[in-house]
Amino acid sequence: MRLAEDRGAYANDWLNTRYSFSFSKYRDPMHMGFRNLRVMNEDYIGAGRGFRLHPHDNMEIVTYVLEGALQHEDTLGNGAVIEPGIVQQMSAGTGIRHAETNPSARVDTHLYQIWIVPDVRGVTPSYGEVAIAREGALRLVASGAGGEGAVRIHADADLYNAVLRPGQVVRYEARPGRGTWVQVARGSVSLNGQRLVSGDGAHTDDPGLVEIRGEESAEVLLFDLA
Image 1 (cartoon, rainbow, N blue to C red):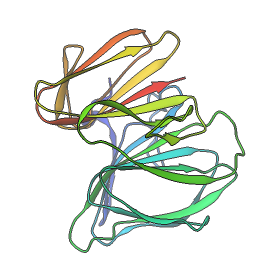
Image 2: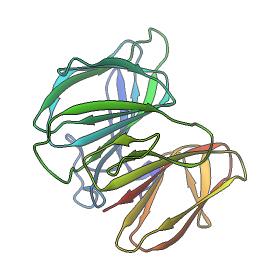
Image 3: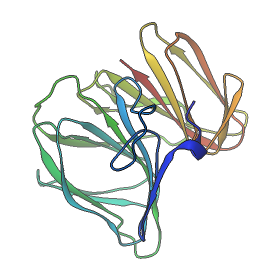
Image 4: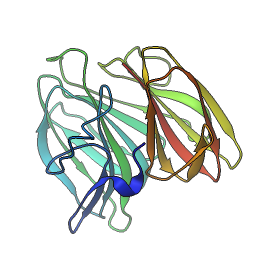
């Protein structure tokens, strides 16, 4: 279990972040990632501000916007504005530089930035995005195997999202030899009978049924990891 209140934190005049795992100057040897899931950052980016052009390599980066918008530019020539309902993927591979900013003059951007360790180093950098449903049952949104309605990543991992009404239930069968991580992006849920609230994460290496019930309107991310 990784409770929201126990996460690392960083804040300045335009960025407020919570770290589920060690990142940047936040170091916690007990929380270095889970399986090939390496970064789970919940960011609030102030209006008109953001991350200037900076480099990455050999990492699969998935961005999931909850509120507001994120303007993306990179050295591959891509430019886009990502809003709720769009998942963004960037394979950093041999090296890429990108900038991520909040294009609004009034509204903060709320998002999760997720890093997954790739299966193979040195791939050709790439960028992609896909429109996703924001209501109903678990849906695949990012996967190493690809799939309709999902961005392709270079990692043995599947990422699902679900937006739940109060009382709505979704179920997932965790497979032997895999790890499962559930992150509550907003609202509150009951996970196999245990209450989790916004920002909480929980994981298991055990196979079996994972049942998520919305206690109030909620949005969750579920990872199936190598």
